[in-house]
Length: 113
Image 1 (tube, one colour):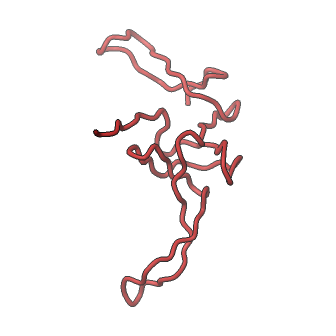
Image 2 (spheres, rainbow, N blue to C red):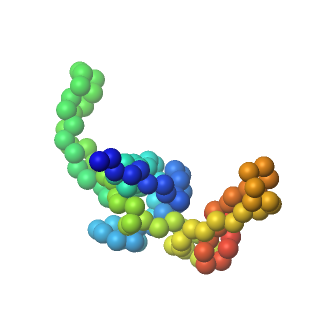
Image 3 (cartoon, rainbow, N blue to C red):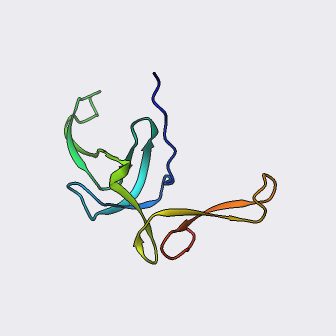
């Protein structure tokens, strides 16, 4: 049985805050979205050490530090006015297929994200 791929309200390049885990309170940009696993890779957060194999003579092998994926439930988008918030949608114009535009808005202050 195939597992459903989730849709997220967050997008690449959004600024998010980590709300749970070892990096709680840190903020960073979303670098990558892993939809199959419900995870995000956030810049500068959840840093782990990884052993990298040397591929050629110029390449350096050894232990490197990279960002590991965070579960989607542990991140929250940041509004410029009011901080971490949830996302709502506002449809401007006619809601039919021809006219309306759908924009993401902050649930606290209503400002466009």
